Image (cartoon, rainbow, N blue to C red; front, side, top):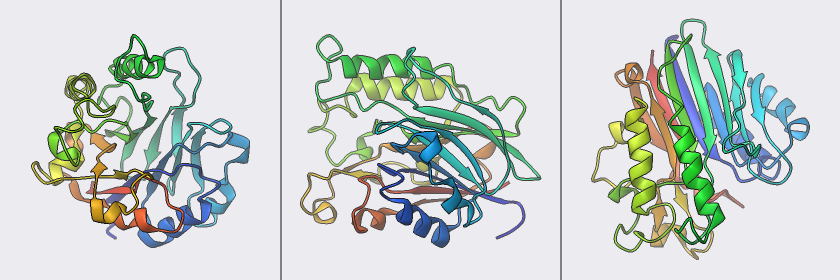
Length: 270
């Protein structure tokens, strides 16, 4: 790869210790400069950082807890200005921020795991859905301005498929959490208001379907292909032109004991 290249992957791993070898295999094959994991389900002191360091990912920004949630950013490059935000006054380890210093550029990275929201899309009867909506409102504070960096990237499992072609059936999912109008409209509004560009859709425009998640409940996920695009990569405007490629590693859903999410990789020529 050229010296000015930069690559970043995002992946809800659904337990980093359970799927450590799967992460190692992915890193060895795809070699992203940075990997942002969500739903690590692991306290910081038990995170398998040493195993990833052996593969060259010697820098980590981790925000985890036992059994639930958790985010981690692994990098070949040094990380600075590590910040772990608390949302909705709940310390449930859903965000970590850092700056990646590639030597030629500094990129600010926000790694998010947005609440799923439960099953009933009504905040008055479902506290999990209320939490999700409140969390999204606080995400409005996260702007694309890079500050002390040269650009900003926001990634993660945002648990919302905002566009019609981000789900297998727009009509059938309009009342299903992750694709209800209040969720999709709020996410798109805060993205635009924050100055973020949706890089997946920059590279793969509508109406082409794009999915990154397939339910465990599906007996044959590949044949039914009832997916949703829950995983996202956004950037500040100045990183749109340098974007070279977006890769959805869809076949990872068919690996042995996989996560229900698959990795998404963005490659840039900075």
